[in-house]
Length: 218
Image (cartoon, rainbow, N blue to C red):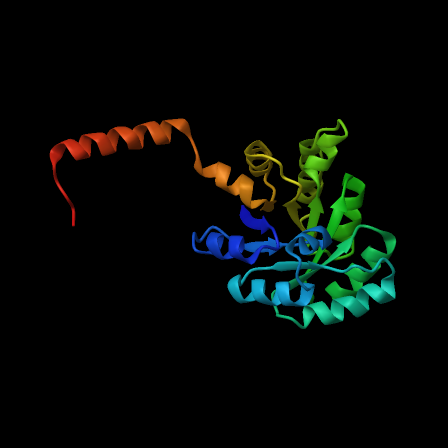
């Protein structure tokens, strides 16, 4: 499974990049607004740090304007993936961009039917939002299972399932068990993945025993 980080904060991205665990980055208008910076500057800086796909989302809602914005965004760096919403105009833009070889991330997916349409339109990634479905009393992971099953039925569909709106480590593990291709994870959740009380307990015992030897390796 590929790990993307869902943030526009360059300091967080730089820190995670040093771990070797980071395969890409996703951003959205909300994350850009939170950063307080201009989108072109943010995406350019991220692309200097990360060689994998960096999703930059259009703000337009109409087909022609989406393509105009995509032209600006994709010139930033060759690893920019244009992010479009799962609307009729968004899918039209997805098809046009994918036909010219541009990576496209279709976002705000909430049903298997939408995911199938995105794959037919040539999306590089489909972004189903599991946390937001959980918020309204549905099981977001059921959506991932359905999309993975449908895509696996048709080997000619090359769209990767990019699980988004991940709220906790359980979302990630369940998605991995289902065979999702990518997870885009907030930095706070990535940090939770490291921890386990038995790891902490074992390390504490090892350090105590080592100290009792009076030795030093260097």
